[in-house]
Length: 423
Ligand SMILES: *Cc1c(COP(=O)(O)O)cnc(C)c1O
Image 1: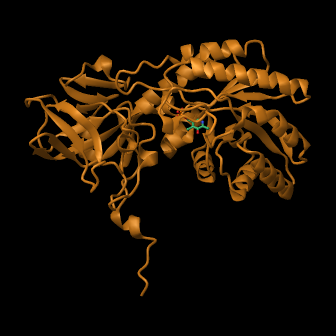
Image 2: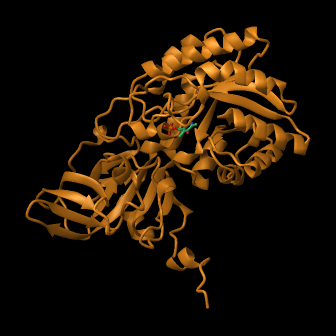
C-alpha cells in the first residue's frame, strides 16, 4: 500500500494484512462476485456523513436536502430517506427517483434554471416543498402552471450573491455572469412581482455559490447578504419561512483540508442566530463523495519510452471527473504489494487521449491486479455515459459484511434496445 489507512479519505476503508477492505468486506471479494468496473459504496460512510450535518444543526430548525445529482442511485437515496433527509432535485427524473426510493415530496426542493412546464406540473402534483426559482420568466411559467392545476406553488427565489467561492470555474455558480439565480440587486423587484402573482406562495430564499468549497469565508459572506435581503423583504411585507444556503462543502480528494461540517456551519448559524426561519442546506459531494470508490482491474501494463501506462477496465465514461475537470483521485492497490513500484498513468480503453483516471502514480502492480479509485461517490456514476458502447458499471452498497447490488451492470443489448435499422 502506498498510503497508511489514516490518510485515506474514505472513513470505512481499511488495510488488513495489506489488502483493502470496505467495512467488513474485502474489495477483492466484491470484484470476484460482481466483476469490474464497479462502484462500491459504504452505507456506514453515508450515515456518518449525514450524521455530521444533523449533529452540527442540532437545536436549530433545519433541513438537510441531499443534492440528488451527486449520486442518484435508488439505494443511496433510500439510505438518506430513512435517515430523514430532504432532497434537492434538478429534474423531474430526479423527483421520480426520490419518490421511488421512499423520499417524501414535502421535503423536496427543486433547483435548476430550465424547469419545463411538464416538470413543474409533476412537482406540483407530487406536492414538493419548494421551487427554487432562478429567473423572472420562470415565475410566470410557474404561476401559469399552478393556475391550470388550481394550486399555489411554493416559491423561493435563488439569488446570486456575487461572491467568489474560489473553486474551479466550471463549478462556481454564484458570480455575476453566471447562468444561475437572479442578480442580487434585482431580487426585491422580482419578489414583489412574485407576491403579485395569484398562484404563487413565497416561502423562502435560496443561494448556491459553488462546489468543492474549501474556504468558509465566501459562504459566510453570502449568508450575510441573504440575511440583509430577508430583512429588507420583511420590511416590505414579505416574511419568509426558510433560508436555503445551498450545497458546496468540499471533500478531501488528495491533501485538501475542507472545514469539518460543524466548522463550516458555525459562522452561518451565527449570521442567522435568533431568527425563526428554517435553515436548509443542499449538500451533495460532502455526503457521498468519500463514501464511494470505483473498483477496476488492470487489463494491461504498457511500458513506454516516456511513460508507463496501466490500462484498466474503467474509463472516462465511468468516471468523467479527471477528463472533465482534471480532477485528482487517489488510486490504491487492492491487494498487498508484492511487486516493485513503478510510475504509471492509469488510463481506460477509450479512444480519446483525455481518457485517463490518474497520472504519474507510483503503483506496485501486475496485469490482472485490482485498483480502487477513491473519493468516487459523488459525480461518478451520475456522470457516466455509454461512450464507446460501454455498458455502465454495476453499483454495490456495502453494509457491514453484506453487499447489496443497488444497480446491476448494464448489458450491451440494453444499450441499443431502443434503436432501429431503417429497413
Ligand atoms: C450541485 C448543486 C448542489 C450540490 O453541490 P455539492 O457541491 O455537491 O454539495 C446543491 N444545490 C444546487 C442548486 C446545486 O446545483
